[in-house]
Length: 539
Image (cartoon, rainbow, N blue to C red; front, top):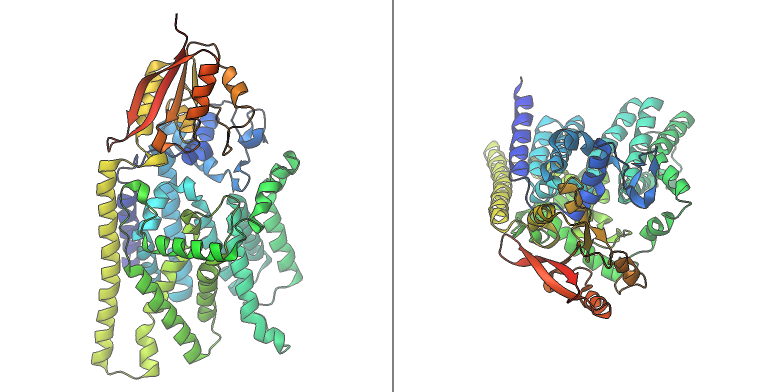
């Protein structure tokens, strides 16, 4: 085993230890169960799958999509782990950790082919210790972390096509682009970034009528192969929309029109960008999110170095172009990234590997740039190398300390709100009660309970996914009336997401029923979060 291989193994082991520590915390999230764990359990058990929009393959309805804009890749990756380990939070998160390992390996391999082994190792360790990457890769389903792996694989495939120029490499580029789009529709941000940057780089050639094109001139076979690969990769979306008669296009189409208020979008995304880059604030649900503000300075310095290097050299080298590609893709389009589901910080998780790469490549370029702009003596050059090594060591150490602090707080708090570890207590409590019917009067816990109890308890969501109570609310409740063996679960008043407490009280009163609280479930912090009720008539 050579020293580079050993270094990669050390990075991976450190990442697994930090990301895999107390893996059951925070509590299993709604999306982790709904979009990965529960369908994986049903597939592993040979049962009919509760597939999205009731659309799937075969008699068991194997899922194609888990949302209109998210593919079912995570489901199939999770199936063997649920089959072996059973329905648990760990069986859902281990495959997410392994996807994180895959991302690091792909990143190292891609960067090494462009900038060499040392920079590849540095960029990989920066990502492996970054708080946003560490804690989001634990809950990979939330960010569809497979999109990060497909993104890096796509950049690497583009590089291979540039070098070899064969139709085989072109079809791989198209296939990865299609699979990335299938995995999550926001992958179009990456595709738009690549296309836009390529156009910008080639503008001088287009303006002056030069035939030379960067990265290389594609021939008809390359174009056909890339299109064919993309068609194969994106085919599940086409099939799904065909089976749904285009119903899902309505929501997916919102990606072009949602959050159309430009100023609001720019301000919101800028705030998210700083939060995700520094690992600050957006992990509130873990109990603390101190972050590492040094990342902001590191990125600013890397941008200055990148721009200075480009202007000073005025060269059109492939390394400069690739760095420009990563820069434009990961930074300049961040404020203009609408989604069908609103603006959330975790949408920017896909850019984190690109940011760490920019910092690693640019800052390590400082000594060479200074030597060319203003020749330094060997003594000053060596001093500069020591300063840069110290800066990177400080940045990585601060990330490590931040991760340790966040884990320490998480161990005490257990997770907040939709990430609460109280979900385990709720699932166990309902499982011990074994009611004939369990009614969920709020969002945020039904699929987790069903998954964690191995489907012995199947809470029925009757609240309706609307801001105000819809006309079918009473009818859905009547389905369980006058069954006396029914329990109703909802969040406490201050923890509600879709508050139906008042409407439910009015309903029971109109039916001559009284409500009795038979259980309150609290978080590890001691804050009550779930309440269990029964409805009865006085004799």
